[in-house]
Image: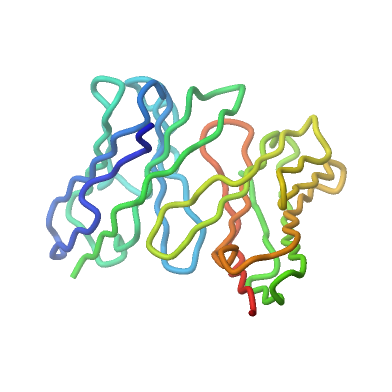
Amino acid sequence: GAGVSQTPSNKVTEKGKYVELRCDPISGHTALYWYRQSLGQGPEFLIYFQGTGAADDSGLPNDRFFAVRPEGSVSTLKIQRTERGDSAVYLCASSLSGGEFVYEQYFGPGTRLTVT
Amino acid sequence: GENVEQHPSTLSVQEGDSAVIKCTYSDSASNYFPWYKQELGKGPQLIIDIRSNVGEKKDQRIAVTLNKTAKHFSLHITETQPEDSAVYFCAATYADGLTFGKGTHLIIQP
């Protein structure tokens, strides 16, 4: 079946601009995660959704970052007033559920964000 | 929070030999330990995982071992092949998001 998809695959923006990154999870997966991966590093957790609600947003670096999942499927990560330090690959993952029993997380291909 | 250390950062082995990558974690509450393979320009691909109620798990040429007392877990790849060349990440969690190690660049020498 179809895996996790992310659009766009690449995004170049100027410092100070607003960007939106989209994630389409595997059908039927209720849990959705956003991670950020800097060059040469492992992915870093940003936020976790269970259904429509953000169950854990402790990884968001500051209030310029926000994510939504209004219908419990597609999610959008929004970054305001982008800074050069926001440049990274933004990864999305989904799993059957979340919480006490940890299900396998499957990742999308990522969106490479470059802030100039 | 959880902290995951991974070693080595680079591992070069001859084709056909075995490769071992080791990770330690800090949070004794962690109960799920996946391993991911990431090729250049792609997202991480889950290759094997282990839960805290199991000491060892094997899937063809790959195996993972877990020592809860010492808080470390390892990935073993036997009979390495050129297509095993990639960056491998270990991770740990007890809920919510995964905490990843910094990765091991595995190079298979022909």
